[in-house]
Length: 267
Image 1 (cartoon, rainbow, N blue to C red):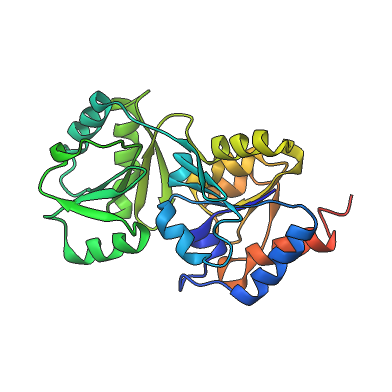
Image 2: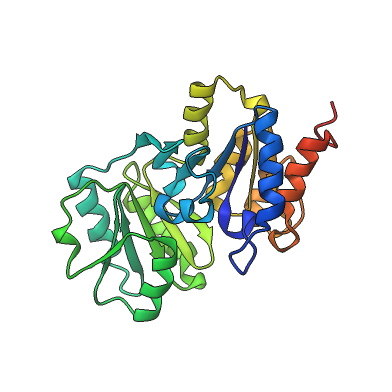
């Protein structure tokens, strides 16, 4: 199994990838019975837009592991209790400069008072995004929060949320001014483990690559955990292997190493 993060990993800074090169690699992976997995904090409906040719052939660990789809079929969907949803929103209300996206399996929500530029940005990550006057109007399943705030405020927010909401949500930094609040234990590594059980794949047979704090568990879990050259220091510390930056097609270069049986896959 090869699992790749998207932003800052599989995608360049321009949010593109070398499709011709990858689709050629993908055919070789299929021939060798190597599964391909997208593991991202983004919404499933956004992720499939990048892979129209193969979306029903591959697996997606979306929303940082809260929503897992294998070949078009939902394998797992996390869910916060209504009580926990309200508790999280009450704590976040203490940070007026934090913009919140509430995420569920079918859609995501933002307040209609959010800045237009931010709504436009978040619409790129959440293709099913609904504006609402108040989060109190949400009565559907939810499983994650995506927070946008100034970078210098992230450590304070993560420390406060980690204490005030301990056992309810866990804060993880996804970079680029964003923090996700996830259900404890429902992270990307959890998603990979579910897929591994379905496909009977050992940890030692898993290759994973990422760049952000929300990739730490996944990269540490994989037998072959890679950090991008542009990865956050916390990820580089747990990664046993490294590849080039996202703008140098580092993820695709890593896939070539798998296909060519070059280091560290030459044992």
